[in-house]
Image (cartoon, rainbow, N blue to C red):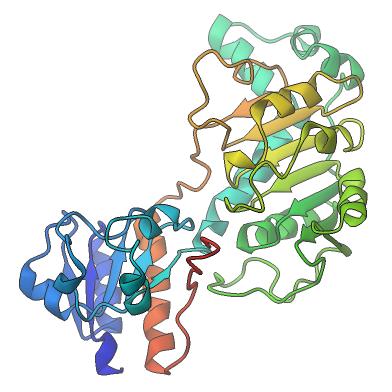
Amino acid sequence: MSETYENAVITVELSDSKLEEVKKAYQNVYYHPDGQVPEDHLKVADIWYANWSGFPSCVAALNQIPRVKILQLSSAGANNALQSSIMSSDEARKQIKVCSSSGMHVLSIPQYIVGNVINLYMKLHIQLHIARSKSTWPARDQVVEQCGASGEAFPGNRSLSGKTVGLLGYGHIARETARLFKAFNCKIVAANSKGDRRAEEGYRMPGTGDADGSIPEQFYSTSDEQSFQEFLSRCDILVASLPSTPQTTNMLKQKHLESLPHGSVFVNVGRGDLVKSEDILGALDTPRGLWGAVLDVTDPEPLTEGHPLYTHSNVIVTPHTSGSVEGYFDVGADILIAQAAMLRENKEALNVVDPAKGY
């Protein structure tokens, strides 16, 4: 391994077994899960594994970490780390590459998406609510009644088979989501900025995803209004997994959600500022408009107390927890280990974030 990357500092908590794996990948590993790193370790650190916020408070100035070249985050989002007092300067961004953990969340978010669409389709959320809140056996008619107009339109359990799933953004999460929905006999389409089929980039967990981008039967462009509208018109299930950027903020409007097919479901696991909550509610309340929504992220976030999305009969709201996979930091450490292999071969680091884009 190049001497440049022989010293790794870790400021998140790892299991004993995972820490041993990391120690086999780097010559020296300095483990400080409490975030209190001694000055002598700061001075020799080459690569750093930290949580979503980046360097801990013990790093007050760039000159404390003169050798750090890579900051490996345990999160897919890098905005908070890039905007921190240390990484916000041009000098720091020239010295240090910030790398995300994009790719690790395929273990939890795709199954969250599929599971909660099924919850809506089978009205499981209503059945569980009645059973738990009233300690009674939910009658079928009672379940349908609590679903309101949507229950009248679709009184029975709905099936995924034959539905068209549209992936808005086709990164790691979307590719694994496509693979899982394909197993339910769904048609898959996708939309990205250029409307092109691309190979999967960055860290890919073995056995997951869509390496060559072959699963979607067609790609559409979000930059072309006609192409984007055609994409939306096909989506029985629209899944958004986009980062927060100037281009994606308020990208979806009520009119877009209303243009989805009758009985459609909108899922957002990316960032809440993609669409205003009022626009989601408006589309849900439009006759033959949006049928249901699964929201792990919202605008605002957290969603204000008493907001009508919480109690809407065909909406599932969760507090940005879809990515909280078991053994979270251990899973992220696999990317740290993969980085060692790349750096040993003098290859470009994995998941390098473009500060201008934020991802």
